[in-house]
Figure 1 (cartoon, helix red, strand yellow):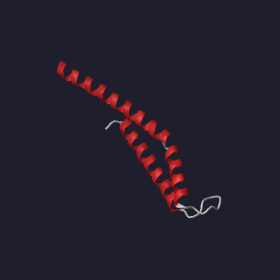
Figure 2 (cartoon, rainbow, N blue to C red):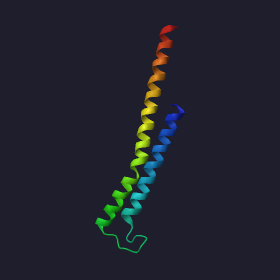
Figure 3 (tube, helix red, strand yellow):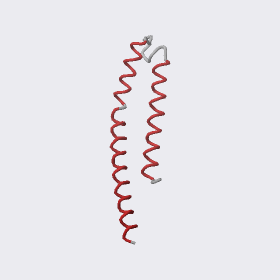
Figure 4 (spheres, helix red, strand yellow):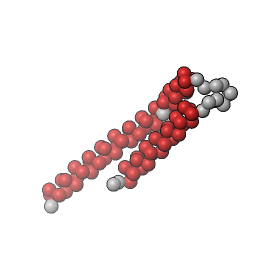
Length: 86
């Protein structure tokens, strides 16, 4: 496996763990930082804000995936051409 794929997977695992921890903190807390008791509606709003905040890392990961796929296909095509020319 190429280094760029390993880094991509490490990045994905980091963002998934971060999102999971923050979602658990939001959903399990009874009182937020200002002292307001958290109702299910307020927890849902906070979770939606968290989702919106994670849109940018998601876009970056998708672009990174597309770049990796293109580079992998290009490298595979070059390797096939070399094997036919030998």
